[in-house]
Image (cartoon, one colour):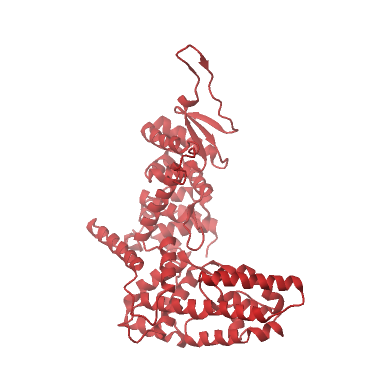
Length: 513
């Protein structure tokens, strides 16, 4: 792959670049930014259309809140975008930003400034003739622009923001006042306690609306929101394998309905689904830019291991291998399940990678198909995943927690500090076992490492939202001196669950040896 500065230089030297950039997928533009750095890509992203910029910002200026938690706007990153665009000229920055959702622009600006109407802080004379002096707005970075007093709360992008607002006030006063009035409304102090203080304030409510609008856009592109993913995975744990087949997941159905609606809207608008995905539009003059992107590996989407994982199945994943061979349309369901794991769950206490989410979805579906209830009608991958997910929760995570509690009742350590920590671990596991979330006690498992490191590594993998099999569980890693906590595989078949049972049965002997 070419070095970032070489790649960017080659792109910018392409004669027909202004014609090709508006046709690229936003994900391709984002990969260019990730590879070359946003600070150096101003001239490149300035060629993007408003629709591309909207999706670019959806990808780039939000940071994950953690598994199952809503993403949050990254104010520093938003400020860097303003800085980069202003470096291309305030007119360019104004054109691009004013074409975006105004609520997003206002929310991003409010991460950096507080805005007052100048009349509010100006001096005045009362009806009695008494002169009230102007209120001084304190701060090292304050500017008066277009009838407003603007105070910086962050310094990083202040100069760029001030230059942008000054340009808008002079050249686009209508847009300027609309943005400033929105900022003034959100700059008010906290509401007094009045019995309604649990309601969202104006700023929080607008940020909620901005985040909700982004989630709606992303759902139409195939993403799963953290809240929906968490709800789907939580409900899947409660699927009764011995009960009649449950009705189709309402959350999954809503996801596919949103995608179908987006595709229908695209058809009505005359835009074929999948437009901008390839270089069919490329002229002879612009073919060079496409070739540069292809050589750098940026034109094709990054590997998600969805179809590829199925094609490369080994004997352990024979159930889903056979299913996907007979149902090639099931790739869409696998994509949904992988996105649900990405947005709503953690593996070993951290977010999934895309490859791990894809592999985890495939493995869980395989486990569900292997244990498909014979009284249920024809299998489908959404229900198969729920069956596998319920088995992982019941027969791995919950069973491991119960066994650890039993073992801790029998273990006695002469070291008082270790014994107190063992007792604390037992209490935590009992409490969270009642809540059916024993992984919340994982932070106390470190005490097990003092007794037997392989047992600690194995339990750390099993007591999790997404239980996995560590090498210590399968017997592949026995050394007490070199424990690799990341050496795990997803549980995809009953044979591995049998290994888990044997590992748990030997736990007492391992901790008391």
